[in-house]
Amino acid sequence: MKISLLTGGDDPNYAFPLLAELILKKIVVDFIGNDEMQSAEIVRRANVNYLNLRGDQNPNASFKTKIIRVIRYYFKLMGYAAQTNSKLFHILWLNKFQYFDRTLLNIYYKLLGKKLVFTAHNINIGERDGNDSLLNRMTLKFMYKTVDHIFVHSKKMKLQLIENFNIKESQITVITLGINQFVKKTVLTSSQAKKKLSLEDNKKIILFFGRIAPYKGLKYLIQALVNLREKDDYSTFSRFRSRLSKEAINNFIFFEFISIFYIHHKFSRHFLSMNIFY
Image (cartoon, rainbow, N blue to C red):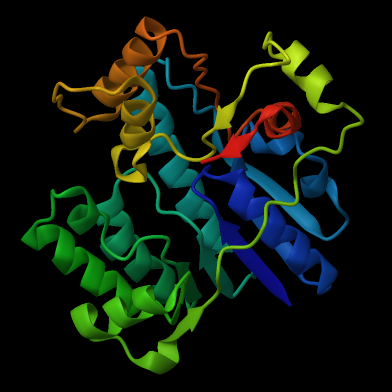
């Protein structure tokens, strides 16, 4: 059996453990990734075909460069879909142009005779973030009706698909989020880990591990630490991140933003240093 994992170049912390389980099942996998993912040991396994279609995703690239590389990626992806003998496409994450991905790209896959499985990490991000629209709901419903099966992470999400998008219960499978097993093992002690992070051994450390986004509630953690009294607008990532850093620095809190998806070797240091996990 052969499966294509379409990662969109996103979230290796989810994609790699899934890939590991597929390898154990002796399944051949075409793994669609990017420059960062190709350095992982797991993608060099015998029954993994690593296809770096996404390429460079440097967020500091110029706008022109970003446009060119996204268009190039879509052409590569569609070319791959047309020539591969893989019949099952597992869409882990959508690409840059989500309305296109939900509609025309999925129609293209279906015309090529592909079976589509989609992991819905969120049923309706627009509703969650307060920027929902008719177009968003229409394209979501089209996608959910088009794919052959949907994986969700909770019973509540399954109920949302059934009630809000009229999806058959038989088309939905609940798979709860597992444990990230790709944190590199280390012989460091907690004291040594704190030292590597320039932290004093007697300090209490709170670790927030996850996506830095308004809906995660990180602002409440900072507010609890510094007893913030003024209101602010946390509606955008850049403003949200800037505000958190400012408040943390002004109140002498050790605060570090790290790219958690791409520097796995640092995970263990932060986990070992913490006293409280948020």
